[in-house]
Image (cartoon, rainbow, N blue to C red; front, top):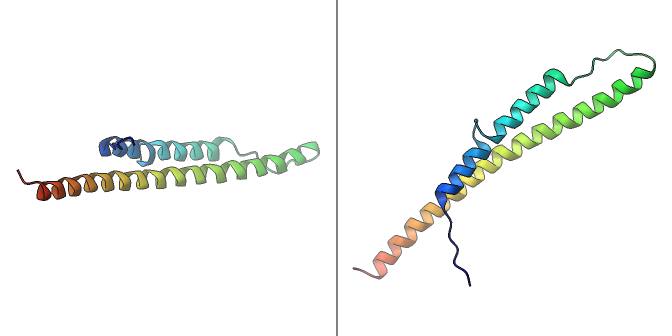
Length: 105
Protein backbone atom coordinates (compact mmCIF):
# COMPACT_ATOMS: atom_id res chain seq x y z
CA UNK A 1 0.00 0.00 0.00
CA UNK A 2 1.38 3.39 -0.96
CA UNK A 3 1.96 6.07 1.64
CA UNK A 4 -0.17 9.16 1.50
CA UNK A 5 1.71 12.44 1.59
CA UNK A 6 -0.13 15.74 1.69
CA UNK A 7 1.59 19.12 1.50
CA UNK A 8 -0.70 21.54 3.37
CA UNK A 9 1.21 24.55 2.01
CA UNK A 10 0.56 23.41 -1.57
CA UNK A 11 -3.15 22.98 -0.80
CA UNK A 12 -3.20 26.45 0.77
CA UNK A 13 -1.57 27.99 -2.31
CA UNK A 14 -4.09 26.24 -4.55
CA UNK A 15 -6.96 27.41 -2.31
CA UNK A 16 -5.72 30.98 -2.70
CA UNK A 17 -5.37 30.63 -6.47
CA UNK A 18 -8.95 29.37 -6.70
CA UNK A 19 -10.94 31.24 -4.08
CA UNK A 20 -9.13 34.42 -3.04
CA UNK A 21 -10.30 37.84 -4.24
CA UNK A 22 -7.27 37.89 -6.54
CA UNK A 23 -7.82 34.31 -7.72
CA UNK A 24 -10.08 32.52 -10.17
CA UNK A 25 -13.29 33.52 -8.38
CA UNK A 26 -12.29 37.13 -9.04
CA UNK A 27 -11.79 36.27 -12.71
CA UNK A 28 -15.33 34.90 -12.79
CA UNK A 29 -16.57 38.15 -11.22
CA UNK A 30 -14.73 40.20 -13.83
CA UNK A 31 -16.22 37.97 -16.53
CA UNK A 32 -19.65 38.66 -15.15
CA UNK A 33 -18.98 42.41 -15.11
CA UNK A 34 -17.79 42.27 -18.72
CA UNK A 35 -20.82 40.21 -19.67
CA UNK A 36 -23.18 42.71 -18.00
CA UNK A 37 -21.47 45.66 -19.68
CA UNK A 38 -21.01 44.41 -23.23
CA UNK A 39 -23.24 41.43 -23.99
CA UNK A 40 -26.76 42.75 -23.48
CA UNK A 41 -28.77 43.15 -26.68
CA UNK A 42 -31.02 46.22 -26.59
CA UNK A 43 -34.70 45.38 -26.65
CA UNK A 44 -37.44 47.07 -28.60
CA UNK A 45 -36.59 45.56 -31.96
CA UNK A 46 -39.34 44.80 -34.41
CA UNK A 47 -39.75 42.47 -37.33
CA UNK A 48 -37.22 39.70 -37.77
CA UNK A 49 -34.98 41.15 -35.05
CA UNK A 50 -37.71 40.70 -32.44
CA UNK A 51 -37.08 36.94 -32.58
CA UNK A 52 -33.34 37.46 -32.24
CA UNK A 53 -33.80 39.74 -29.22
CA UNK A 54 -35.78 37.08 -27.37
CA UNK A 55 -33.19 34.40 -28.12
CA UNK A 56 -30.34 36.74 -27.15
CA UNK A 57 -32.01 37.60 -23.83
CA UNK A 58 -32.40 33.89 -23.06
CA UNK A 59 -28.75 33.26 -23.84
CA UNK A 60 -27.74 36.31 -21.79
CA UNK A 61 -29.68 35.03 -18.77
CA UNK A 62 -28.16 31.54 -19.10
CA UNK A 63 -24.60 32.89 -19.30
CA UNK A 64 -25.22 35.23 -16.36
CA UNK A 65 -26.53 32.32 -14.29
CA UNK A 66 -23.55 30.14 -15.27
CA UNK A 67 -21.05 32.86 -14.32
CA UNK A 68 -22.77 33.40 -10.98
CA UNK A 69 -22.66 29.67 -10.31
CA UNK A 70 -19.00 29.47 -11.37
CA UNK A 71 -18.04 32.31 -9.03
CA UNK A 72 -19.86 30.63 -6.14
CA UNK A 73 -18.29 27.23 -6.83
CA UNK A 74 -14.78 28.71 -7.03
CA UNK A 75 -15.23 30.74 -3.84
CA UNK A 76 -16.62 27.74 -1.93
CA UNK A 77 -13.93 25.44 -3.33
CA UNK A 78 -11.25 27.83 -2.11
CA UNK A 79 -12.76 27.79 1.38
CA UNK A 80 -12.96 24.00 1.48
CA UNK A 81 -9.40 23.60 0.20
CA UNK A 82 -8.16 25.99 2.90
CA UNK A 83 -10.06 23.97 5.52
CA UNK A 84 -8.52 20.75 4.16
CA UNK A 85 -5.03 22.23 4.37
CA UNK A 86 -5.67 23.26 7.96
CA UNK A 87 -7.01 19.78 8.77
CA UNK A 88 -3.94 18.06 7.35
CA UNK A 89 -1.62 20.51 9.12
CA UNK A 90 -3.36 19.95 12.48
CA UNK A 91 -3.50 16.19 11.96
CA UNK A 92 0.21 16.14 11.16
CA UNK A 93 1.07 18.04 14.35
CA UNK A 94 -1.31 15.92 16.44
CA UNK A 95 0.14 12.66 15.08
CA UNK A 96 3.71 13.86 15.63
CA UNK A 97 2.92 14.80 19.24
CA UNK A 98 1.25 11.43 19.79
CA UNK A 99 4.29 9.62 18.37
CA UNK A 100 6.60 11.66 20.62
CA UNK A 101 4.56 10.63 23.67
CA UNK A 102 4.55 6.99 22.59
CA UNK A 103 8.25 6.77 21.78
CA UNK A 104 10.12 9.12 24.12
CA UNK A 105 13.67 10.06 23.14
